[in-house]
Image 1 (cartoon, rainbow, N blue to C red):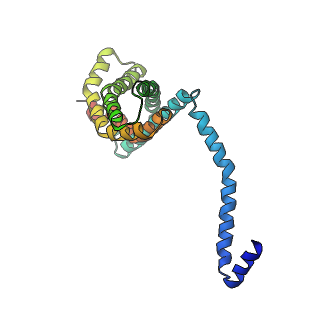
Image 2: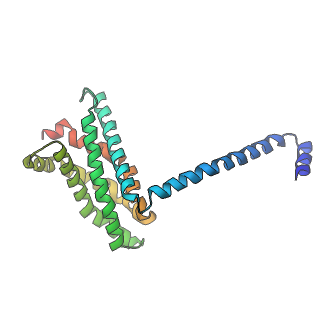
Image 3: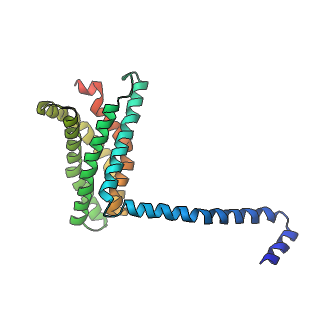
Length: 218
């Protein structure tokens, strides 16, 4: 093989660069092998049945907090807030924990009761998810924040009346197409992770609805 390569180089000296790049690529691929193996091992541990609940909670907490940080900075740029409020971000993160727990058990229940990935089953899951899980998550969100903010029952009910419908309308815009992909292609253990990736933009809107001054005064 070495002699064959030498002949090629004599006939076409420009081939030297090709072979160098080829060998460099092979060396890089070999070097990445152990790294990819460690990443795959970490993924299997995080999404194993033993650790899945904690992983889902961690993802939900992190992205809910990030969504609020993004929304707060946007509000600061618009002059609606003077500075970043860490308490607000903490509360939004805790609400993400509550919703992460709800979604974790909901997807396990839904996939057990409606097993399969046919189009009919997927569409049924989407409808049931929108009719049951969406209102449940929205209620959990407002209830968690009401407890953290020491709101009265009357204040909690009033906030639900003024704001919950805005989130529910947004849920019907965002989630049906997203959930078709979720229920058709992904196994149960990746559902909350996928949801959280899609929901980053939705979490920004959730924070906006919750803390928007104009919404609060209506």
